[in-house]
Amino acid sequence: MPDDDLAAPSDKRFFGHPAGLSTLFFTELWERFSYYGMRGILILFLTATVADGGMEMSTAAAAAIYGLYTAGVYLMALPGGWVADRILGQRNAVFTGGVIIAAGHFSMAVPGDPTFYLGLVLIVLGTGLLKPNVSAIVGDLYPEGGARRDAGFSIFYMGINVGALIGPLIVGLLGEKVSWHLGFSSAGVGMLLGLVWYKIGGRLLGDAGQLTESARNTLPQAKKGFLLGVGGVAGVALLIWALGNAGTINITLEGFAQITGVIIVGLAIVYFLSVILFGGLEVVEKKRVVVIFLLFLGAAIFWSGFEQAGSSLNLFAAELTDRSVFGWEMPASFLQSINPFFVIVFAPVFGWLWIALGSRVPSLPVKFGLGLVLLGVGFLVIAWGATYTTAGGLVSPNWLVATYFLHTCGELCLSPVGLSSVTKLAPKRYVGQMMGTWFMGTALGNLIAGLLAGRFDVMPLPQLFVSVSAFVGIVGVLFFLGSRPIKRLMGGAN
Image 1 (cartoon, rainbow, N blue to C red):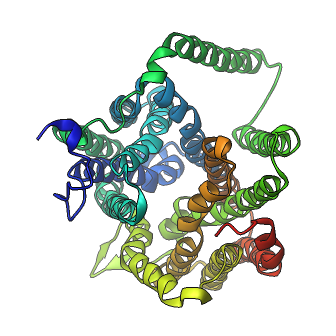
Image 2 (tube, rainbow, N blue to C red; image 1 turned 180 degrees about the vertical axis):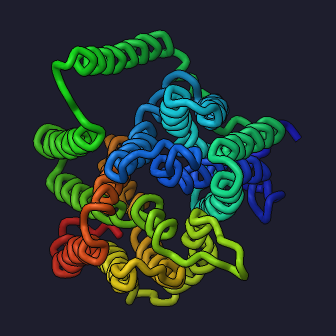
């Protein structure tokens, strides 16, 4: 069978789906293994003492690095998609991104501050190339679209969660019990396994993800634009470094993270206003763009709480949780596998529930409200558990299990419908850009999560968690109250 026929609708060699889906399934599984495995030990390594092999940073500084790193991963999805569309093609972008990610993990495996920070930068850049484009290739396998395509994405996302489940178990065990740098190495090995699988199974992808003919025709201009963009970013970075080195400016890590957050919010507001006012849209389209802006805000607030799993809640697991299992102390990062485990178990349940409800299925704003309220209730649970640590005691890991269960239910209400709704609401000529705003919201949420985690040592934990609960819960209630006006703004889009 010729390669270009492999993605045809008749190809059902992988559980009734194109054989190329197996290539992407396992590639993404190992990439998520490396990402979530390393993320599971990142803040623990940053705050560990030098004697224990860590960097002995303050919680505030470590949380700022965590927030900047996780935000950068999602922000780079925007230029990563552009580079793939205009220069490399999705196929080459995925492989190149994987190589850069692996190099980043192995750089972090070498002790030393320069290699550590270089590793983080490389992982951010590599993930920006790989993450959005491997999903784009999945879509290319289904030129017919429809329900079969949706089912293919469901299988693909299961691979994501399998990788997220096993990554913290292996990387965490090696990192916390043997050596932090061995843990970073194991994350790199995982990415290498993904690359090997991707190369071996590449022939199954047919023409999916190849650079289009129109892009080839504009390649010289795209390369010039890319070089100008890289030069501009490098110039700004060099200027900031020079000013800081000369003592002209003194920006702390926390301050830089805060400035970055303000810039993201500012860019989002300017972008949405420019599209609404000067985008040549019809009235219905303008109203739908307003809804997308509200989803951007809701998503950012949701991820600002949810993504504390890898920061404040990870520190809670390490410092305040009794992890003794038959005399053996379980690595704190093991608890990072609870969320993907719950996703694997309950995602089909939620999928069945929405179908079973039929015409009574909650609307988009109500689902967002549910997601935020469930997130808030989860933080109330961990705030309750934190009251038992104020006297210096350790609490059962069941407090975190219950919190992660509620957070996962919130995620399954909000996350699956978010990006899908953006594609339905966006004006056709702005679909790609509007999808980028979803990544911006995720990046902003991750950044805020890091900044909030920086309060771990300076604010009573029950108060910190109750504050987060109240904020996200109030926003969730606002989505409930505004559900009817929001639905009207959607102009019939579901």
